[in-house]
Length: 121
Image (cartoon, rainbow, N blue to C red; front, side):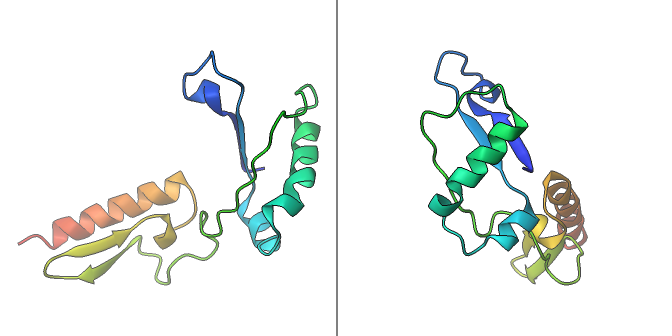
């Protein structure tokens, strides 16, 4: 797994039911891109329970597939942004222009801010 959180606690909800969120990695997603969420459910739960053996078996499970949630191949040029139009200035940014993850987003934001600054009249 790339990310696991006890989501209700992360959101400050101590009184609601326990909710666990688990994200798989980019390589796992690429390898299993054609698999349906239902076909992966048992394997994912088994793997999660192996990582956290003291956790109870979940009362309910909802698997989602985000086909485009993580960057596996960034936009060519890797400059962190793309100027789509000069006037009006339109700058595209995000981790798709650098690398997957929060650090990729931050790198892109900085590059986009510089692009905007450099193109102000």
